[in-house]
Image (cartoon, rainbow, N blue to C red; front, side, top):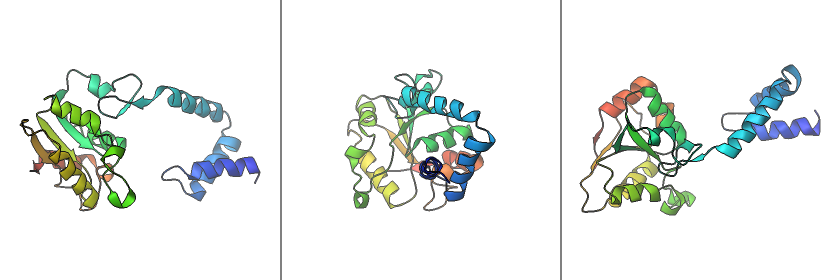
Length: 198
């Protein structure tokens, strides 16, 4: 293959979920089978790169200061579900079982991998907690050591004068599993069966 093709394939292979064969198929599809799709894809990627940013309140994807969920006045802004990544938020939202708002940490604490509190999206959430905006915090983090450490850190940061109910989803999710890979029914059960975490 040509150097340009191999360069495209190499960059496609770096995307999550794509291996050598998948990257090769996509590259061949875009360059040989459906070349009319390529300019539209490039334009869409450039537009997304220009327009999409993090919501200043929760860390979700947004094209304005606030994401559509934070801007929705019909949602319960006193209930905040904390997730690790945006795909976790999408999975929970797809379940249709939750009408509060979210906070995306963009990871979890992992001292072994050099990820500390300053590396995650804690500050806007801690500001919301300190301002008294939050009455319930739902921790929808992975059921592993790093997820537990992140939950402990977060609960330790709740101001002593605040009365905030803290719960954690868990029923229906396998140990060591994450929110992203659970189906809608499992997520609905996990949200409805959450337990106190304190």
